[in-house]
Image 1 (cartoon, rainbow, N blue to C red):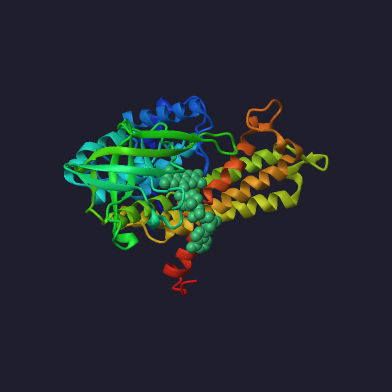
Image 2 (tube, rainbow, N blue to C red):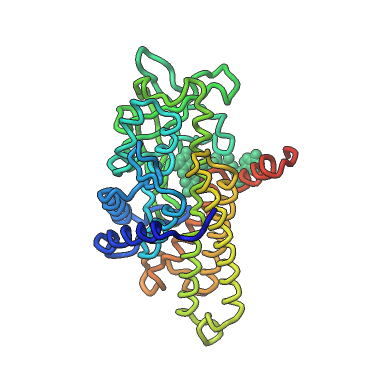
Length: 395
Ligand SMILES: Cc1cc2nc3c(=O)[nH]c(=O)nc-3n(C[C@H](O)[C@H](O)[C@H](O)COP(=O)(O)OP(=O)(O)OC[C@H]3O[C@@H](n4cnc5c(N)ncnc54)[C@H](O)[C@@H]3O)c2cc1C
């Protein structure tokens, strides 16, 4: 790909920058890898920022125009994210609509489903959550037990999902259900859209060690969902589910947020002391931050390769697994290094009195481990890369 910006690209940058100057949020917006909103207020701010962007037509910008996107090409999409990052207000993560179910519906949805759901994903009017994991089915997702049985024009769903992010805010869920218990496990699954306000759904929050309440348990007791909410063919939901997972693994951020994180680490190193002088004056500290920065830049290029595939209309490739693995581990290492820099201050929790940077470093460090588990654990990504990219024999 060509990395030079054309006059047309630069004109696009100016157009978006002008819009941002007039509409930017008053404080930075933070997307925490593997983390969640710090609290309800944080969620509302992110949602408001997403909707503000949407009001100017600045969400889902790389989606084709026929679906309501701007049809931006690779370079303009990169410029878009660069400009958001430049004002410390990246595109907020508001559930699984824009990143996961939207692109999946474009590929697999019926005309009616596309028309019904896609516009409200773009505007952020409807929030989505992902009903995949169950108490006994995580890495081995295809062993899931939530059942959907047919009754006239409806599926009736019974079972339990767990670790469902943002379910407490969600209007809709995409839920993997077993529709043929006698078929081999990958062949008896269906991908069904469920209105979260349907009677029989109970959402119970789970609190993380960081104190954030992002996860939930979701219980389905005789939940009736019309059959036209089936995505793809009945019992063929595994293929649809894999499409979503490929998009999820491609979400690793492409290095841009990690580049910003290394910048923050450099600022932290100037703020805190080590052996009686600013940590930044210690060459080991600078060396470490430079090392993290180099890795973040390398991931950025992998992210660009991923983006190129998507903008050429190709399904996400193995770069998704590499980004997910590399991004989540780099994020964790960077946050752990922040703990070293902070020394005794690292013990102070989020928003504790006297905490440096309002304690956000310890919040993020505690959240960072989650990033190595979400979207398929890193051990599973190792397996995928080994088997499907490197062609190694199955372990
Ligand atoms: C921040 C976060 C957000 C999440 N959001 C959602 C969500 O919105 N919706 C949703 O459905 N789920 C969500 N999840 C759940 C996530 O998808 C699962 O946690 C993940 O798939 C792992 O499943 P598990 O927790 O059951 O662990 P298990 O599958 O029980 O794994 C336990 C350990 O065994 C290892 N292991 C398992 N199988 C293998 C193997 N074959 N080879 C090598 N090692 C293996 C794993 O790597 C792991 O270390 C989220 C998780 C996190 C952390």
